[in-house]
Amino acid sequence: MRVIAGTLRSRPLTAPAGLQTRPTTDRLRETLFNILTQGATDRVAGHHFLDLYSGSGAVGIEALSRGASHTVFVEQAPSALAILNRNLATLALRTGFTLEKRSVAAYLRREAKSLESAPPARQFTTIFLDPPYDSTEYDLALTLLGNECATLLAPNALVIAEHRKKSPLPKQFGQLQRIRLLHQGDAALSFYQLAPN
Image (cartoon, rainbow, N blue to C red; front, top):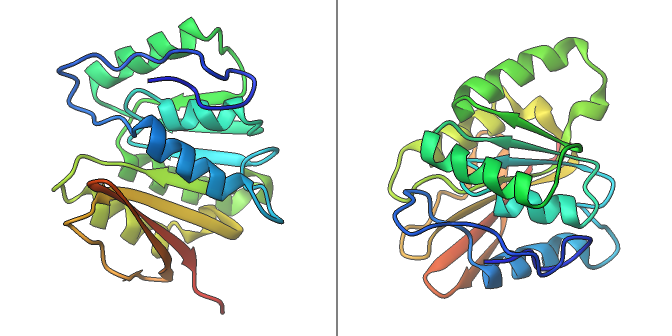
């Protein structure tokens, strides 16, 4: 596993066997960031990126390598946190990110509440989530982002969920509507945006 592009291009990332997290493959990560950075709008460089269920941190680190102004990693599993911290240290990343050692639900609710009195610069242009397959975390996180925590999304923000191709996600979670579904191998990426008012 490695960083695909940007300032940290080709640097190795650690994800040892036995880790309960399932790292996003290099190929799928490359496809994801090609979508996010090509075309008229680069959704990474100069923007805030939120990596939920961060695991090894590969996706959030890729965002930093490609110029994200700030990345927030949210992870609470001790084994995953150890690997994430090791990757950040190995790459000498000391600034430009925040590591939240708490559940995704707790983080989203806290941030949405604090945003009530904070400037809109704290909103995210891209939110990526990759919870354990077959868990209820998909419904929990996407429902929060489509309802009470929708204020965390910047205008035209994307919420992207990695999941099993054979386990499709619903087309809508509150205000979040799926706008694209991409299959690659056994994995899939569902792209959501807030429905227009």
